[in-house]
Length: 198
Ligand code: GDP
Image (tube, rainbow, N blue to C red):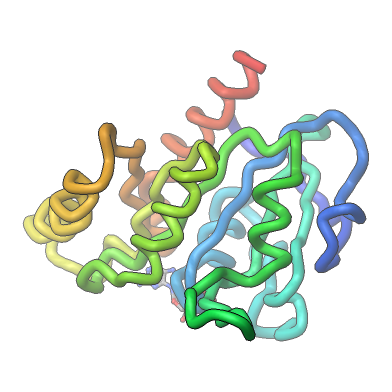
């Protein structure tokens, strides 16, 4: 699949105000600076579709884009722990968890992880939470051009070795570089395949 048409639709913090139609959502999420805007722009072949740095406010919003007039690319805010007042239990921000729990047309999520770093508990916890809620997701490793190609598998395996202890199966994953435009076609074909199956 290729993206031939992409347009911004709406931003908000309330899942109830997300576009009401039957088009599937493909949600992109990860910690800030993971390379999410760069990846979205590279996927859509537009320089400034997702403009995190120049529109700082938008980073805390659920941003819907209409792609090829047939599906939504959803740029979600970076997740972080929000401690509840009553307990010390770590929870993710409410509008993020509400989006995942209430958005019926969510087809799949893509969790972005910077391939340079050692496994981070916040990313593992977030994926574990998605798994518990039975929300389908894949991992997108970003910025692969920043490490030596022999190290790519080493870094991916570090994640999967940990996840192997918690999971009965491992999620799909993609190795990408927005800079070199690597791994993009694989993501788009994957989305195209799911769209055909819906
Ligand atoms: P966001 O906060 O997750 O939206 O991250 P950005 O897309 O704004 O990227 C954060 C920083 O990482 C910027 O300086 C980007 O230029 C850089 N970056 C993003 N993707 C890549 C990539 O694939 N390769 C390299 N080398 N740098 C990247």
